Length: 195
Image (cartoon, rainbow, N blue to C red; front, side, top):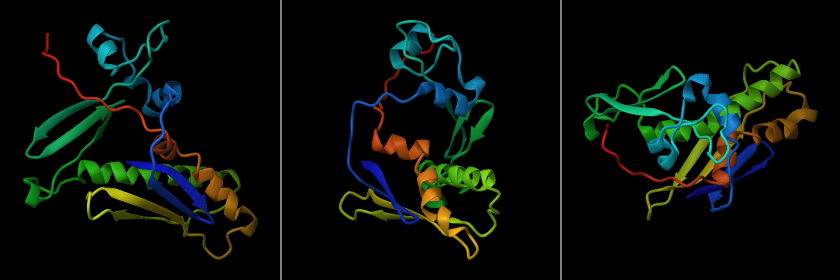
């Protein structure tokens, strides 16, 4: 499992490590997904914890719902808050290569989440973001074939205020994806028959 992040001098590392006992701030999650992601809680979804009551009724755990469907071929898409996140497989996996794979999409959230914090940091201080890419590199464990190390480097151009070099890293460190790697949620899968 990919775990905590260590950010130093413009570089972040996700290392193998697991933590438990974390309850994510679902209010922030609902806000980040948008109001359409939150709906009334049914008896099935309360048991499976896949939808939320916007009122946060006492005794209920608020959660967020995404709908996953199969639009054809090897496509598997996620729908939430009026958005569609398409995924596909390469031809070798029976797909048309029309979108990233689900796993590539998942990995891209590490850098893009850090990136939105870097963007906000720079905008707040009037620092131009042209020439400030984030480069994400992953290492795969040859035995498990799982990602064992992720490195995110914020490349600062000449002229970037030196006094903010460490602060921009601390800003990126606030990323919700990173925080979820540090305290991973419990993921469960079940099935129910449609009514």
